[in-house]
Length: 274
Image (cartoon, rainbow, N blue to C red; front, side, top):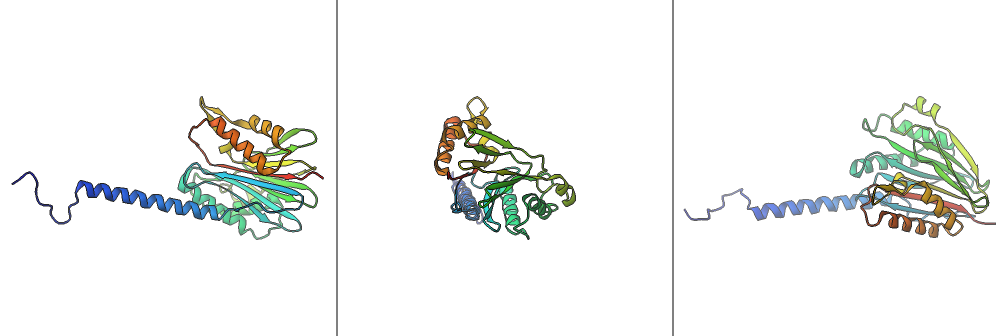
């Protein structure tokens, strides 16, 4: 018998096995990218044009697919809902949870319902349909461009931030509302509330996920709320797109080339000066 034996039927050479694994990985990556494209297609491609207001958004997944989502939903009578949600976990499981939640918001039976009631309805849709140990946090806000108010309800999410242009101060509107998908309907609805804030000319709202404020610099220093306040002080009076461009460039500088550890979603809007 020589140094090489004849390959019998059904055997694969090492080179063939390696090629098969590479092909498999390529196929998986292509599927992930297709899934990410579909997920992004469910989100707005541009902000709505609202009279007297200027809106913008930023969305950057940490992986191919994202556990964050944002949306703009019509309400009625000059009102628009702004939604920002962050699913627990990362990658594909979080993205599936996020897509399911986004569809629940779009399927809400009463678009004109108050913000807190809408969160309660979405929670009722999710409860019993999400895997044990998983949940979502989110903020649902109704922007009224006629009365110039924003009504915010918060489900265990980071605070909504309002920049008051005339006073040059930022206020954080926190909530003790429970996360989505865990509590039964009655318990959730009795715990969630909402807050309405007037918007004067030049005022701005900012909603975001924790990928922004927890973005790490070398040495494990978070970007934090203080950086946001400084950017509001420096850039809030300009167009929303310019404000976001400045804010995200500061995020990049802060990270100093480090790996992004979490999805980043930011939605902002400004009442135009009179």
